[in-house]
Length: 423
Image (tube, rainbow, N blue to C red; front, side, top):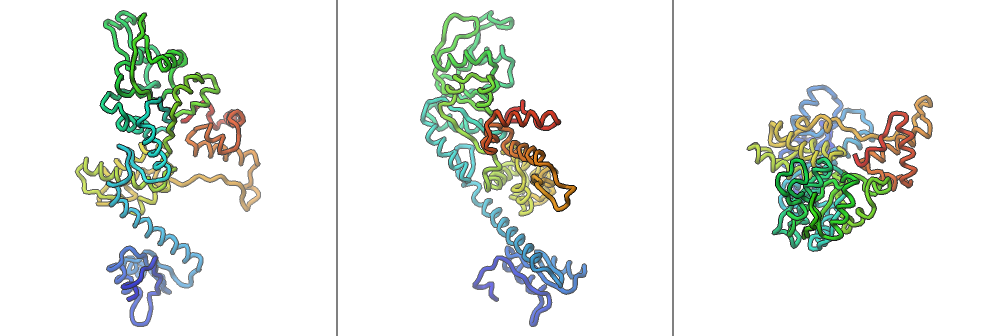
């Protein structure tokens, strides 16, 4: 048999052949080389023939007379499925040994570039601004910088600039003297001072109230803070790391964020790539999550089926790594076999199809005005950019002012929300 000394991407065989049958050949291939897809050709397109072919392990079967282009398409799909199945098996082997930077995992070019930046930034002491879409793992990046830096033995403290009211956030950051606030029965040491010797993370710093920005700027420049109600300044020695999912440059242009504070925060910029730009990392991360959640749930789930892997790769992941993690946690909980099947995935991932901009059709009644084509394309680019108008403007070759003007015009017709930065 040729398979003894050669390899094949796929096999196409007729059911009726001299000396043996296509069904028998398919059974032998399935027993010895189950990774090689077999397509059977038959002149008898009955249900019994189809069942026999599938039971023999065939990938597909084609009835005569057949179209050569259609057969070629089925062959392409079979070969792609084989390659994906091989990739899924490989990922099971390498997931535990994947390139890591602390809890960050990835083998794609964008992640290798990120790891390189982090390796160089970690030993430094300059302020770091971490940018990236929601769910990309910006806090994990901040924690990795802390653990790899010279302040690893010190505290890592974090505060959300978007979650607290202005007065409470000011007290949390800078502290307050006894009696400075109605509820201040005792003095409070702020996070800047408490983080001395370690790292302070200012999460979603672009949401910092405008009134607090001059005080933050002064603290960064002087390395001292003045608690609310106190006449004395207190020095601190903490590395400051800030994160934002918003377009902070656009906020500066709009007067919602002080330019000098932006420059002070942006000493070292680290951009975290969205999951859709990370290629094979989707399956790498998915496999790592399968292992984690299967162990936590005590289930014998060991990986993904090739069909489930296809759906994961086809999806755009607007929620990034966080969404993938939630997806796999659900899939492991619902899985009834050792491999996660398509039916175990969330419905929106099972049914997802890429959106396309329709430029023209064969029916003249389906043609649309050029302005509508532009509108659809601009909004599609903005969606792909995760709502980041600065990035979308660069892709479109427009300045931000022009893009904002277009979005405002679209909004008058009920589409687009230019006021929602980075969402």
